[in-house]
Image: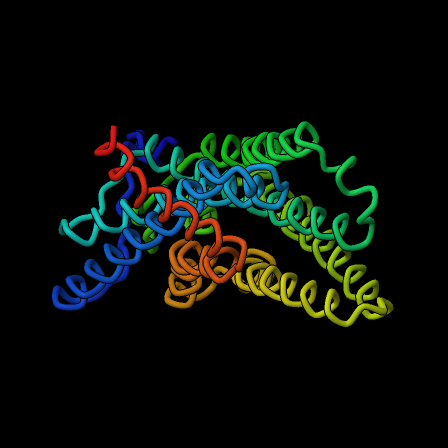
Length: 320
């Protein structure tokens, strides 16, 4: 944290999108609307699962309601800061606030990786082992799985954040990004970097991203093989329809994240990096509820039951 001249880095400057005032206003309006819609979608899903007795008992919807809460937290670590920097001329962020955002952002991102694996496991058990599914995915097992995803996600980023935060930062304190990302932060650190870069790459790429992606692909690959061998055409079509939506979410998230952190040149071009980061930090949390739940027949039925219940409540109160 020490500069070459003996001063200490107290803050960083986030350059953001590097556009004119007119485009800043358009981006501010775009992210405001996107953020509001993302929160509304995920709150709707959580409310439906919480109030609908049928959905609240199903493991898939227990996972999805927690996934919706995760998405709300995930988008809230970046988008409010983006709105703040678009509204004000200089994106100044303190040293500690920058690393807090770094920790929360990556912890929630890692947690999302584990949740996608958990949902892939849930579909694998439901389709490949339907008779044992109720016993294996009991409420206690499901809540244990949910807790494990949260704990593993928040433990995974402790070491990278701790290593980078202990480096010495010299020269410029300007980050050519709109979030505190490890790549730009490492580029500001003065040598020697010791093992910080390699540990971050190993933790993010091998243990978290590639490990979860391999598990997800293995699970859905086994599901597809099982469905191909299945004799029931109707049940096969329904199962294929369900997992196809799941695979779209997996492709959107892991595809964009892999493009950023797994490929060797993922951090080299700042404009491409910003565009990809916008996609997986703001756009995918908006798309995921639409893909996962809001086009789902069970969710539509639960929404209808909730609305009918709300319509009957005032009449009941008047009758009393």
